[in-house]
Amino acid sequence: MNAPDKLGIPSLQNKVSPEEWQTRVDLAACYRLVADYGWSDLVFTHITARVPGIHDQFLINPYGMMFDEITASSLVKIDLDGNKLDDSPFPVNPAGFTIHSAVHAARHDAQCVLHVHSVNGVAVSAQKKGLLALSQQSIFILSSLAYHDYEGVALRDDEKARLVADLGRNQYFMLRNHGLLTLGSTIADAFLNMYTFDTACNIQIRAQSGGGELITIPDAIISTAQEQARAATKSLGGMLAWPGLLRRLDRADPSYRN
Image 1 (cartoon, helix red, strand yellow):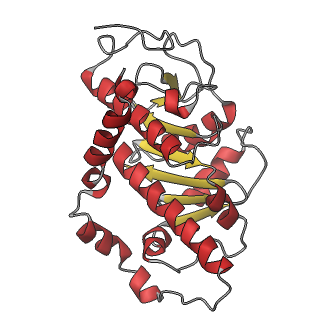
Image 2 (cartoon, rainbow, N blue to C red):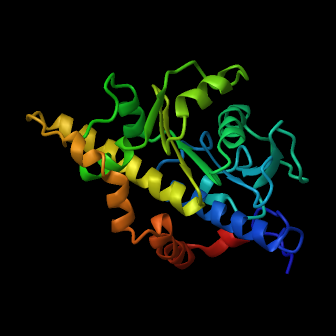
């Protein structure tokens, strides 16, 4: 049924493939979860997901819509040149396009790219040594972490090559003085990666504020972190927690599915 949602946006469910619709539902859920966890920075961060089976098309948030309002049908489909591919009344943030299009173009293994400006994430990104090996959460990030120096608001195309070169094949990306970015082969993986990344930053700030001497985790443990992560999640990654997160959203407000 193509009924409009509360904002008057008609449903696209019968106008896109079942695979694209499922991606839209999962991405809208991810936006709602980012709002729930307080990472949204009003409307100024982004999560993108590749349209299944199409390397040069992805979905992004309608610029100006709050994250707790986003629905599957309100997401905007764009190509790697920033052109809107559906009839959306909303614009796309050029800074979001610059970062996400660069990553999607270079990393075909990433279905989802999630970028936030969480307060403690930005605080750690401003520290010269970046993320420290202070918690169990930190070891998973440190085993696949890259950094990119701040160049101002990401509006210039020439920054794309440097972003991609700095990211390499890593899953976690700390944008200095700016925020956190994660990649995932699924939306669920990108979300779990960000949950872990932001949690590690929260723990670091709290540990540092306690004033006591800090204990760091040895490199030998960090080197086996990816193997440990697979064991802890039964090789399911983000999908271990994702169904439960969706059930929680559905109990509170299932309108993201519209």
